[in-house]
Image (cartoon, rainbow over all chains, first blue to last red; front, top):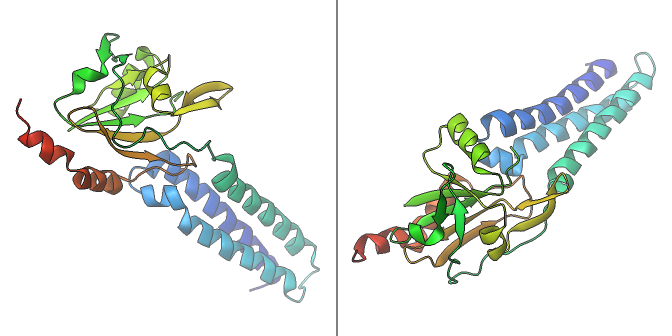
Length: 136
Length: 102
């Protein structure tokens, strides 16, 4: 494969990794929770793409090294941004949550039909509380 | 086994989400952070400068005792359904509730 084609492939793989991750998050997250959590397939594709970019840069030029270098830089920028998104931007403050064995407080919240609901109303059966960030 | 969502958003929005997603459990509104705060799950300025809840799951047994908690330090990471079901099984809350006099 020529250096030009290899460098294009590199960027294409980088974009595939990133776009694929957004597809998982916004469309297929319920079916692929593992990928959403770890993004391992995406990181693998990203790495292969970067490998292609590097190989393209090092290949004897078939028309100069400018395009492979430019596309390699673009790919590296995309990869850096994606890594920051996965591991930096999405970090939240640490919290251990409520202590195990503690009793849930008797608070009153509001049901979807706008009626007040006491947490104690749920006693008698186990209750799984799922806290959402909201603002959806 | 009961499930309830908890969020700072008002009931009108929660109704919409329930309808849009076809949820068969309620989403409870906690704008004053009564429960979110009590559980230490408040995220200061977590969205557009406003305080919201951290993404978390808390399992209470039939007596309101906290038996399992899942909070991750990254909002990309959430417990999978398998993880939650395994935690429910391991805690024994369903078996215990079944045998409790009522």
